[in-house]
Length: 208
Ligand code: AP5
Ligand code: MG
Image (cartoon, rainbow, N blue to C red; front, side):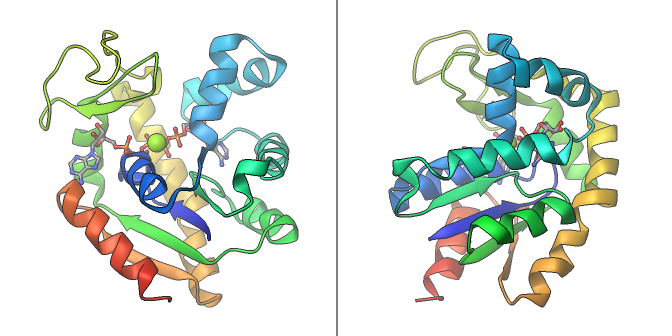
C-alpha cells in the first residue's frame, strides 16, 4: 500500500509513521527527515533547503518532488511505503499523481493549541531520529542508542508559529483535494499515541 500521512506540524505523523511502517513492513519516507539529513551532511540539496527549513517555510516544490520521485524508485518501496509530510501543496499532490497511485491518505487532526505544546516539548535523537516528548517520556538520552537528545532548530516558538500558518495556507487544502478523490481517512490525533495507532490501523484495514 502507498499511504500519505497528512497533518499539521506536531500532529504525530512521524510518531505514527514509524509504528505503522513496522506493522506493515514498508519504509517511511519523510521529506523532513531527508531534508534535515541533507542539511547535516552539507549536500547541495541541503544547502538549497536550509534557509526555508530554518524559517519554517516550505522548500520549493521542484526540490521535494524530485527527492520523492527518486526515492520511490528504490527497491524497498516495491510493496508500498508511507509518505510522511509529502505532499504538502496542491502542486506536489498533482505531481505525485503522475508517478504514484495512492491507496489512502491518513489525515491526523489536532488543534493548534495542542500542536504548540507538542512541538515545544519535543526532543529528538540526532543520531537515530528517535522522537520523544518531555510530558510523555522525560529522558535526557535516546532509549534506543543512548545519544543525548536535542531540540529541533525549527521547534523554536517563532518558527513553530510560521509552520502552523504555512500549514493552514498551503497544506490544509489537501484535505479537500484527497476528500474529493475518496482517499481521505481522518483520525483524531489528540488521543494517546496508542489510541491513534489503533484508529489508523482500523481505518486502513477497513479498506480490505
Ligand atoms: P517535517 O519534519 O515534516 O515537519 P512537520 O510537518 O512540521 O511535522 P513534524 O515532524 O514537526 O511533526 P510530526 O507530525 O511528525 O509529529 P511528531 O510525531 O514528531 O518538515 C520540516 C520542514 O521540512 C518543513 O517545515 C519544511 O521546511 C520542510 N519540508 C518537509 N517536507 C516538505 C514538503 N513536502 N514540501 C516542502 N517542504 C517540506 O510528534 C510531535 C511531538 O508530539 C513529539 O514530541 C511526539 O513525541 C509528541 N506526540 C506525538 N503523538 C502524540 C500524541 N498522540 N499525544 C501526545 N504527544 C504526542
Ligand atoms: Mg515529523
